[in-house]
Image 1 (cartoon, rainbow, N blue to C red):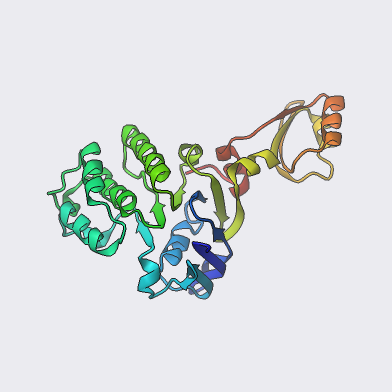
Image 2: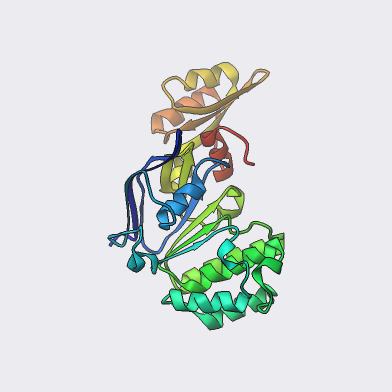
Length: 290
């Protein structure tokens, strides 16, 4: 059974369309990256997936169950947000106690181990923690929940480099032992490239890409060489970006190259290079990562 599926999901706020007819299907035991610039609709989409808000139209199902106001579906999801206001007045240990009552797969011993690794004081109230330690509470909640669908929204906000690296290491380690469907929503593309298997990119509320990372990167090429030769090669090609530096041209194209294309590249004296996920993200979304 498909863990999570949406069909033409849309969310409107008065005249603004935050999420626009998004259709996605997520498989079991896979780590997905949800990427988009600030304001692209990532958090709204996650709130829809987790049943935190209702959609204006379309449908969402969790293991075949309607997600909204459905306790059975909700037990299969752990949604970790940047800052959880519902936690503010509780001590960390009490937050984890509540988690143990809600998540059927909750591992309290593992939560304590994680708290020790992150040097988190479980006797302190949530609102008295630093921003980074509040993030750690969410990380522990997500990992120790062992929920079949675990969603992290900007999971490394406020963390230093060492703790960010620790999070990704622990995530992969625990995923290896307890496979599940994980969604990482972030604008720090370079950080998650080695972690995610599939990528979902949204722009202005619309789905632009859902693909295996490896397949996507194989479909995009950087072509460089003499400007007029590059221009000649680009005829009938899907060009994502094109730049000119004096007599040199550089273009990013989105299509797999045929044997004939490689013959043309050789004859024209051009160079073909691969692209990183971060650079591709910038070209697809049309701006610098912020």
